[in-house]
Amino acid sequence: MVNLVLLVMTRLGLGKSYRHVLTVRGRKTGELHSTPVDVMQHGDQRWLVAAYGVTNWVRNARVTGEVRIARGRRRETLRVAELAPEESVSVLRQYLREVPPVGTPNTCIAVRGAGV
Image (cartoon, rainbow, N blue to C red; front, side):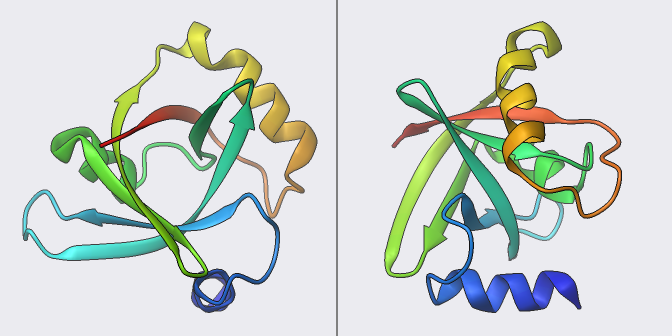
């Protein structure tokens, strides 16, 4: 239910500026799936953060290598490359400082997006 509310708000461009709607093709079905995600600006790059570990969107992004993010009317298709844990530390620390926890995150994975 919370994801649905966040999804609708983000599609309208409402809420926190770091929140976006991520759409990725399913690795098994090929169907498009959308979910709210947080995009962190760190230096001159943006990073997707999977705050709850290896979820379906992470698995799908790993296989397809590409995601679409949207906020309000702005949409972008991005290539993704998963970082090693030691490479993602500074982004994840920033995430934990800036994004109020909804629960206790299990594992965080930073995924760098580069324009397609």
